[in-house]
Length: 274
Ligand code: SAM
Image (cartoon, rainbow, N blue to C red; front, side, top):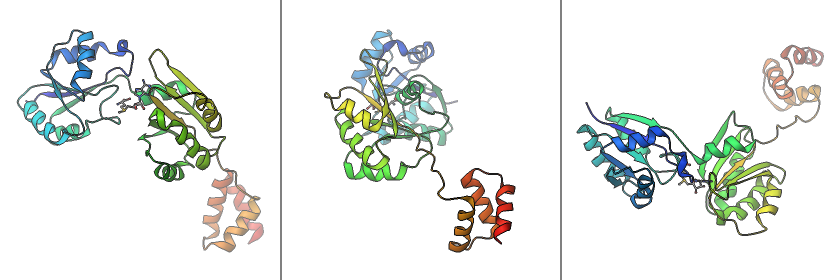
């Protein structure tokens, strides 16, 4: 029997957002692997947890994983935490989890806060499907290239951004995704100065340009508006027949999908053109 690796979520600002189970697991394990041990000590002190800490961060993930695997195989149970929120979500951890899985070591989630989920839950934007992209590229060129790729996405795009880059990021968003695209900006969630901006990208730019932006941010870009097909059903049928090598059957299927019409209706119209 090997020990268990517990992946434990911790608060993203408000210390009360710690679950009972998270506190118990952190007390019971023999070791806590933390991104920044000094930072996490404050949280542990708050809950009277005296468990030993060891560092686990992006610069020692490889070597530390081997050490932690050896301990887990020696039947010790270990908790993994990050500075805030859920480990492995734009945070170190997945290498250790992946190695545990390869070695047949139990990995158990102790769920709790994550900034992206908290922001989505209060944004008022569609959340039935969303795409989380972590941190945006830091420079305009990379950012614009990225926005080109996602500008037609039909789901909400969630990302993390540094406060000093917010304005240039919004300028690039206006350029590539359009001024009227809906956006939510969640700032300092669960903390004293928590705020949620909701509006268009242009309005966000105007609002955040008023004073220096501080604190931690989650950006949520709303889905792209559904594109309206151009021309009539008949014109589209004829155009596809002239411009493509598709069969009538394929053309009817494509046009029905584009116009949101029953295939039988489009088929009837196509018969008049054949
Ligand atoms: N693993 C964490 C999670 O589950 O939320 C995210 C870690 S990532 C290194 C840190 C980024 O998350 C911050 O730069 C910020 O963009 C976002 N973030 C963390 N706490 C936040 C908060 N209280 N309010 C808004 N955004 C936050």
